[in-house]
Image (cartoon, rainbow, N blue to C red; front, side, top):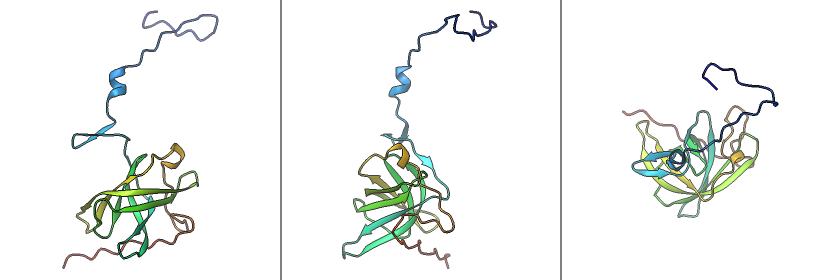
Length: 161
């Protein structure tokens, strides 16, 4: 078949080509971060929050509504209003875009200050999210972030004096 020949559309004319996958593209990492291969692609998020539940050393349990910066099947980057130590355990809860409640244990991987006076937390989930869980629902007026929990909002950032 030449470049200008029409593509046959009826089944009486059988034409096909073997599809040979490019193995080099399959083996390539999804993304890199400081030389480390990333297991799952990150997706930027807007108007999305999760409930982060933390148990402090004092035994006090805190539920906080945290805006999501980005998400993947293996973890979240969220904004928080205090420093947390690496390795601290917690739980992430939210409604998925399909309306399903999601509850997954997590570990704080890093805590980095932002220029806005908040902290960016990297949360590694204890299990990989299923396809239908991987997209948190957008937050809005009258919508609970996590059914059954009443998380506090982040503390207001005071302008520098």
